[in-house]
Image 1: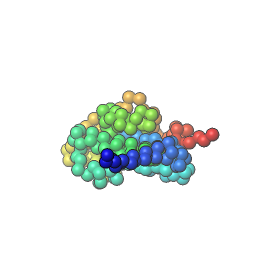
Image 2: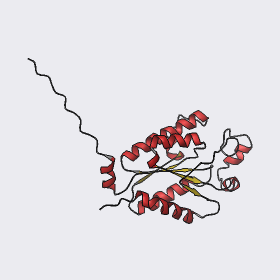
Image 3: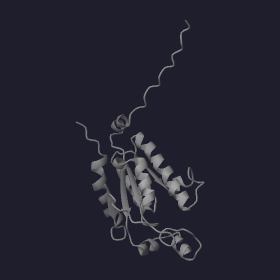
Image 4: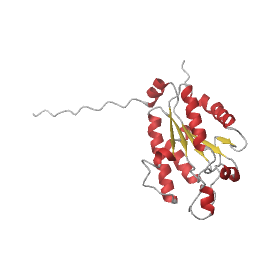
Length: 202
């Protein structure tokens, strides 16, 4: 009787929990949402810098490092925006499995988009941070002049002008970046996030 060649079973992947233990943190996705120029990227980068200084391992995802690479084939139609968020959520999920804290900064203007991201990432790992300045303050800090171009009809489907922004129903945090300075806003984020991401041993 001919003996079969037994194919060895691959070893299981190193668990997320083991990676988190190695990194000394609980991986979560911090999802900054808000109108254009509401301060999402500014606060995301400040949060990354502060968490890194405290020994946490983080990665920021925003339009600058996603739209120019993996999503450079997408436009700004509703379908493309939804696909943009879907890909970002899937990338975030991969980072989660590696034990990394992800800080996402995207307008993600509809509840459908944010709901999709939450569903892919998982309810327990998704922390929605709504930046809620007035539209006027966003326009004032718009150094690229995007609002002005949108109002002149030079940019179509621009959120806040000729495309809607749906207010989050129940965000984990809401920050008024028009009445709070960056230090106060950052401290509010840290007060909420540190107990969640800190790994308690023993």
